[in-house]
Image (cartoon, rainbow, N blue to C red; front, top):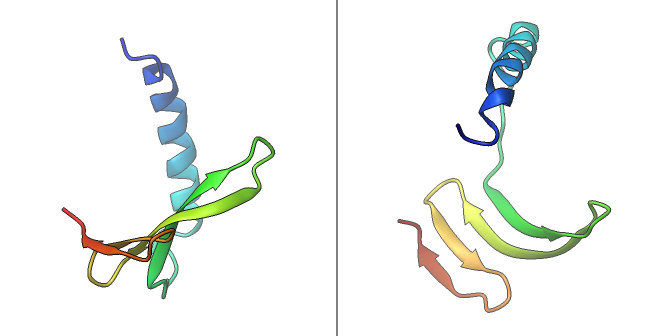
Length: 70
């Protein structure tokens, strides 16, 4: 048994409740998402990677180098 499998059914119920509120979702126009490092309190310390939702490329923010996502 996986350690988090006991949470799957309650999370499915919660997801169903939220999906009933807004079944079609809402339009999103994001072009990138970021992978960040968080402090203990949840504050963003730094951005590590930026991922393009248009072409899937990944940019290492520290070096500025871009590599294609696999």
